[in-house]
Image 1: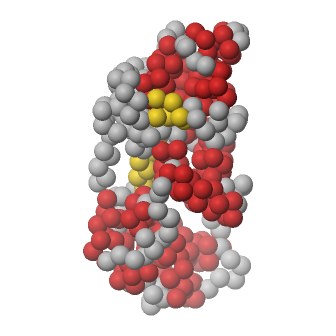
Image 2 (image 1 turned 45 degrees about the horizontal axis):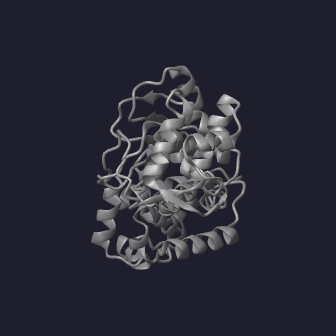
Image 3 (image 1 turned 90 degrees about the vertical axis):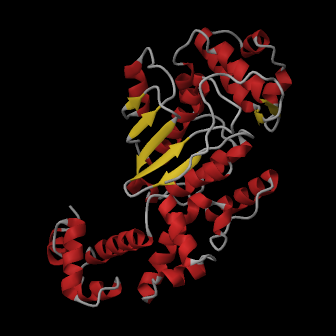
Length: 356
């Protein structure tokens, strides 16, 4: 299992050391939300918490972590759902460079992996983790040890993740967990998340069905995504992410194996040694890293075979024998047993009745 490596999360870090910084527009989000709730002018709200106008107007300015926490805590002091409201107001508003990079990714998995990889653009101390298991994908938020965020900011970040994914493909989460007491308007919180909400959790977490990760994004733009990724890598001093260098992004290992298998399966070359070599690692290291994500090489091979077999059997005039050979079965009987295990139907019944 994955070691989440998250630190304490309950209270505000008020050291004021300025050791880590956050994206200045996060202050503007809090000010604009408070202005919307109270009807006061944003400049007046900013003055109440000692913010200068230039701190809100500069799109690339960084601000101390302690200032971010104090600002949000002060403005949300009398509003139990302040973070959720801020997310509602921000979801369709101005987007950051990371937001645009997420939107231009190929699918939901790519969008979430982009968010995790470039999280330090938003906050120097962010330590969010994406874990992909057999049936679910889990995004857990965290900070480096020694730093904390107020509950209102965890509310905001969690709600933004849910709303962003929902806006991209209308995918709803299976569950949401928050490290705080139950909202005064618990029904309103459940309505926003469109999922059961667990309180007093160890860390803010969103769980989606794993099947949703492959949902393609309408705004996919490979060239734009590549360009933005390179800009963010330079800005954050990150090494280029390539599938041949697994170390640069551990959370991409499952997707990298799946892509390799999807191509190699049709070539009949899906041995773990061959896949590991193409991904620039050893079979033992590959298996260990897959196990860290709650899966195995055989489980991923089985999943790719199942998806390809179902897609091929849905084609008009599909031959079960030909599909069996295409997905790596030497015997039709073995393929039929596997297909029945996957779908509850024989290949011929699936082809006749369709995927319904």
